Image 1 (cartoon, rainbow, N blue to C red):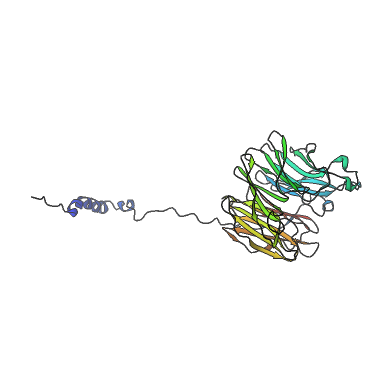
Image 2 (image 1 turned 135 degrees about the horizontal axis):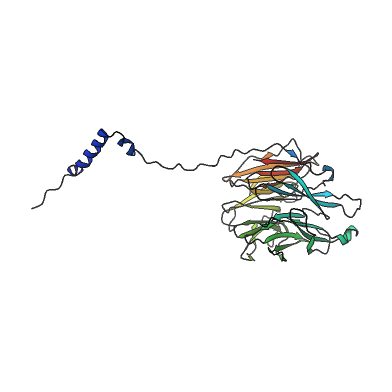
Length: 414
């Protein structure tokens, strides 16, 4: 004989009575019974309230001493320190020693003129970088003192280095003897995770990789490539783009890419080839997610149209998007574009081209969450005679510095 099935309601009756009694005798029990599950709100996008400051004059150096193509290099250390190298006219009447380099320092509030370095500067010849020991390293292309009194055709160009210890710069040392007067091109120096300084430079139609170990020993090695290297670091790897003549069908300059990992370079890859376009002066930036951003000039045929193209890679350079046009002009761009990434993972782009000679239009755009902003002219009330240098400091302020018709200017996006 089957036993009777228990009544579920009868089993729950004691618990129901207990809850009712609690609510009648102790009204505060209501507060302990959750009516809904409290969920943590999802984080929204960071509200960026920064804006550009008004331009301020940098008056610690005579404007008359600045050359046509000043400044030369900009770098950042610590939270707000900015290091600026300028090409200046030598304070001498000797015709074969025309230029010097001035080092200016910004501590977050004030600019100071720290020192001057003798040397004949040649097209974008300088780079600087700070090391964990607090020292600042300068690299520049110049003419050795023993050759400065020679006729211009007999001069030879070296790659020099000195160290600023906060008080004085060490005696300049030649790290690479060129042998002939030729254009050097340096983009920037990069410090890797071991404390080794890397500089990739172009000289006499070839590219070289300089490594300076923490102890000071230096090696210089020829690497494949022709012109306009742009070197960046992300994590424990370095990434390099440059332009060279294509090895395949027709065209002019292509864009090439490779990485430096575990003490060796990866194979060279051609990432832009167009028989109708010639690539020039690429600029690479890597954001905090490891996404590679690349911009470069592309001249169509023999002109007059020149495009500023953008490509992106989400897999450490394994694949790249098709190029998209950010800007087109029928006048030539005046210098390499500049890309920097801030702490909000916003990509900032500065590029320029000749406007009404001898003035330059400095354009500015940002990339946020994959979308480019509208193009604006930086500070049209202070027209530029040189391209603006741009960097981001440790406090997430974006800085631009440029030479106008009447002064050297500095503005901040903060």
